[in-house]
Image (cartoon, rainbow, N blue to C red; front, side):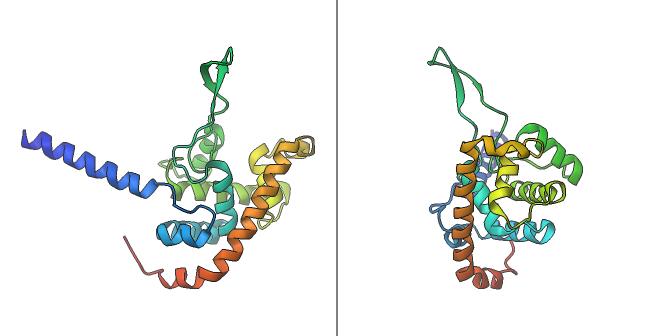
Length: 201
């Protein structure tokens, strides 16, 4: 009886901790507010920037556009006869909205076998890996939020046809503007964030 109760208690606290770590920030429009609320997210994005050369503000802008920082984000389901819920539009999931195939490629190439799309740390590393690969394959600068996002959304093979897709052009402009906003905000608080680099959990 006691052992069963302890098991439930451990599971409850594990769920509480996971939920608190994965909850959506209160203000997703401001990078300083995001990192003030979730400092370890700054450590993860900073590490990704150092590892892959993907600017922090672009990482955030991608996630803002793709999932609005919802760790359980999924595409809407299509509907049969306009009323019956059916299959989802794609297999994309989590912060980065990576699809299963590309996520599998990322895990294989980085040897990050335990990576999960619902974990922020893995999601930003995936975005960094993708941006770095886009730079190598398509010669798009890592700081070019507009064209990097088009490649992210359309895929490397379909990038050459993006001008036919007015929707993705609109999305890319939104990401570019959001990245610029995050960059300006970070300029005001990054020194403070860097001073906290010795904080551990």
